[in-house]
Image (tube, rainbow, N blue to C red; front, side, top):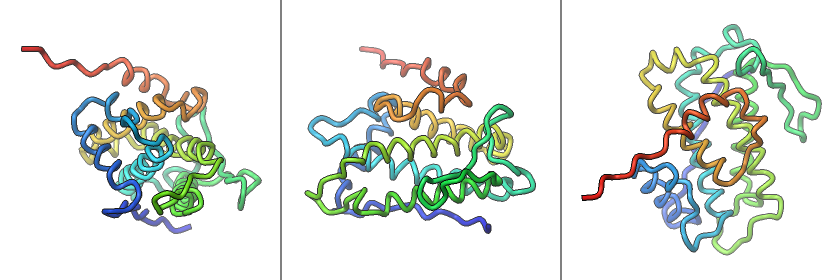
Length: 214
């Protein structure tokens, strides 16, 4: 399977989610990660989850895109997050029997699957007023569980490459944002987070330092 770059999904000006996207960007820019993930007052939870899911997919697609030359079937013959954790691909629809594939193939399957979900208007409605489906939260949880695996593989197999590219601060910031978000809305089970449990604890322990009052 040939590797491809993943096209970030744009939330167009004037469309559903545009306002929330800008709220997310502004609060993230404040440096207060706890504030950045909170549901804005008066906003719908599913709307907030949808906008942020798209943004996290975009972030990870760009991050992984910088590593494609390093993450090859020869260099990463299995999709792993350290020696104790190996992932087999199955989407429960087209692929029901788990497949043992290289990391690049796995991530290609995974990102293509996520892309399909966020482009499916029956799951992620674009028109204002169209309700989210009843299974929306369950799909969101699967998306975040799978996106976490990309982070886990990057940290365990490609952190030296990230450092050589000078992207370690960016990676850590993106992952910290991801962790605070899934923690805020209880989106991923702790057992799924085990490959990066120590790093996650470090990020959670670093509370934002409050500004000194004058």
